[in-house]
Amino acid sequence: MDLVGPDAPPTLIVHGRNDSLVPVVEAAHFAELLAAVSTSPVVYAELPGAQHAFDVFRSVRSAQAAAAVERFSANSFGPPGAAQPQGRLTKQSTASPAGARSARALAQR
Image (cartoon, rainbow, N blue to C red; front, side):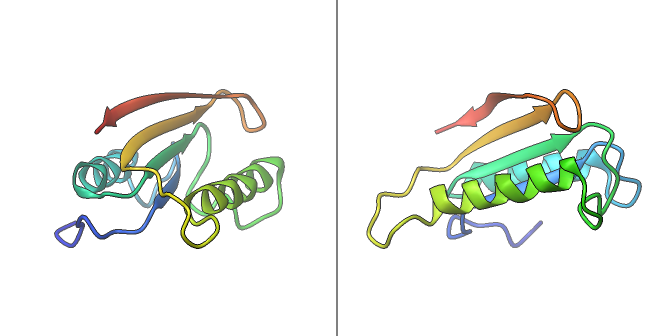
C-alpha cells in the first residue's frame, strides 16, 4: 500500500464480502487510500455472499462482474483525447447475486 500514488490508472476493485483469503476491510482500506491520492477514478464494488475468486466459474454474478469491468474500462479509457473523470471513490453493493445495485459516494474531490 506504500506504492499508491497520484499517477495510478483508473481502478475498479471488485471484492467478495465473504472472501476468506483477503479480508474485506483490507480491500476497502486500499480503495480509500488510492482514492485519496489518485487523480483517476477509483471504484470499489463489494459483492454480498461472494468468495475469493468468485469469477472463476461462469455464473450470473461473474457475468455481471465482467460486464461491469467492460463498462468501467469503456468509461475510463474511452477514445484517445477524451476528457477523463477526476478521481473519486464510489462504493457499489449488490442486494443479491443478480440484484440491483445501489451506489453512494464515500469521498469526492
